Length: 317
Image (cartoon, rainbow, N blue to C red; front, side, top):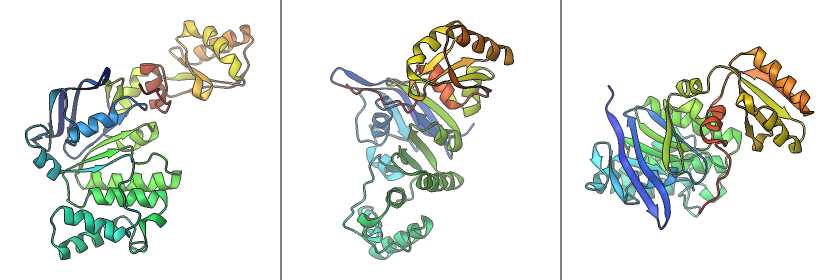
């Protein structure tokens, strides 16, 4: 069994009456990526902040690279890198100056700091823009610079908190390629995200978090298997038809996805389930823009487990 890079046991954290974390247990094996998937307000960032020693848990224990976050915070910080949701880039400095500054915080000699900055700028394809102000960088370039800064100290463990939020598709793919490269180097990575496609591509294992608790965990394939085999996806022509369609398909265990104007039905009988769904919709006089039989996705998993989609915003207390 692989050694654990990150271990959390019974972690709780409250802010007043709000329970942000409710007894979280989590293990990330060395050299793997764990995708922490959940909607806004689910507790993902709070957990990262606890593991990164930025917040003290109310209860529970955690270790990062073998160091206890409560008893040895300095050792944890020396062994980890953190990339926050909002890029911590000084836009008044050049890309090179940003990295040299971080290296100096690690007490690296000036010559070593400049060498490390050069290596990371080359690695993240930022050499051409190295001596430009970071304020002129695109969102994708700033995010790559931010990830590069988190690697200045050559950490064993890396926390990436929603690293691609707000990026365009091309920039998102570029960041994904960077993360895949880090995994090949043997880094242990905890990746938080709202994007199902992101964890499906990058994560070795996935943990689904909702309302401060882990509600499901496993590989992408094992989680999809929980939904069953195929699903019937009914996409509606009009939003006002959603309540009637949901009621018509209720006996088939249909679940509404209002954000995408669709209803998903477990297809336990394959094509027969599809035919039955069409018959019920016709009887309820509901017009479907599209209806199809397909394999389940992580979106279906999340909807089946939580009753909502991962990207759906959640009201904050």
